[in-house]
Structures are given as C-alpha cells and as structure tokens.
Length: 317
Image (cartoon, rainbow, N blue to C red; front, side):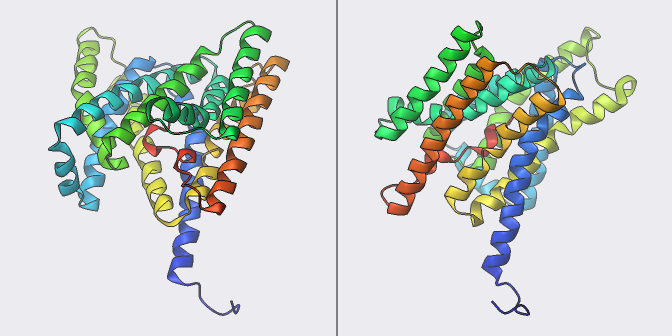
C-alpha cells in the first residue's frame, strides 16, 4: 500500500479489533490488582455486589445496543433459562474462588487453573459432547495430568484452587454451549437469575451490621459499584475483537490473561514459586504449545474449526 493511501474499512476494523482484544485479555490478566484493592471485603460479599452491579451495567449496555428483542427471544425458552441458571451457578463458583484466591495470596495458582482451562474444555468436549480427541490433543491432556500430579506429589499439595477454577470454567463453557445464547444476553440472564439471591444476601448483611458498603466505606463502595464496569467493559472489547479477528488470533490472545496473572503473582506479589511449580507449569506450557500448534495446523488444512481454542468471554474472572 502506498504510504499516503488510507487504510480500508476492513483494515481499520481489524486494527481496532486487535487493540480491543489486547485490552480485554490484558484487563482479565491484570484484574488481580483490582481484587486486591477489595481484600478487606469478604469474597462472598464482593461476589454478591458483582452480580448486582453487572446486571445494572448490562441493562445499560443492552439498551444502548438495542438488543432487548434478542434477549426476549432467548428468555421465552424454558430450556435456555434452565441452562442459564445452571451456567450462572457455575460462573458464581468460578468468580467466588478466583476472588478469594487472589485475596489470600494464591494468584499463581489461579493462573495455573486458567492455563489448564483450554485442555479441560477439550476433555469435556470428548466426554460430554462425544467430540473425538486427536492424538496430539490426547498427549496434551496427559501432559496436563502429569503436571498436576507432579505438583501434588512433588510439592505435597494438591492444587485444588486451580482445579476448581478450570473445572467450573469447563462446566460453564459446556452449559453455555448447550444453551446456545450469545455472550452478553446470556450473561445478563445468568446474572439476573441470581441477582435476587445476591440482593437478599446483601440485605441480610446489612441487617446484621456486617455490610461493608455505604458512607462509612466510600472508597470501597465505589470500587464495589465499579465491579459491574470491570466485568462488563472487557466484554464489549471482546465482542468487537471477536467480530473482526480470526478465531485463531483470539485463541492466541486468550493466553494473555493467565500469563498476566502469573507474572503478577511471581514478580509483584512475590508468591512462592518452587521447583515443583516450575516443573508443573513447564508441563502445562508444553501441553498448550502442542495443543495450539496442532490447532493451527488443522485450521490451515481446513479439517475442522478451532472453536475449542477460544474462551467464553463471560467467564473471565
């Protein structure tokens, strides 16, 4: 292209989508810093606020995008509502343990969980959706298993936080796939169905004088209200990226999030990173490398789509 020529509309869209994709996954990778600011608030209370304020944010977003007809169509199906309720429960478990783990100094273990997630998704696809594992995918899953066993036997401690995060993420992804709802309307149904429970929990805390919200805690209250934006805004960026970038590009970008958390845990929060951790992460990274290269080759050969590489944005912690 001539230096003076202006980029075409598709080129501009791709460029802005790449920036949006980096912004979304970088935000999810750096989000432990945000949760650390709320470490004096119990994780369950943060979770309840997150459901309430995310619902408010999504109301504004759906109104701005004029997507209420799409939401009403999805809400007419009892099957969809049941799946969204179940996926919302899986999401709440994922969010709760992630927030709790960050605030008790286990950021590195959360990154391990999200590095393992793509492999768990593949395994769940094989078990529950009868998707066939390729030879290299099976090798990746086995390397994943060896890494977990090494940390359990070599370090003497089962990485249960990482396992809860990746399994709850995998269950969430499976339920979302079965519900066939779009990301933002689906997340709205999930949060809306559970928001009444969150509100009752917050009201109960208020009655007991244990609620950390209000004039006496102005800075914390502002941070808690902003959980809706912190949850919803990266979804907007991700949505733009998903519309204009190749599936494989999104698949590579997803590794920014656990990488960011890993670097924060080791270098900013100085969490323990032993030889056993290094061996385990090496197995996981090797498994991801094999998994990704195999996916790229299959994508280039046109044998099948690589949707298993792409995360569900809604589940990002």
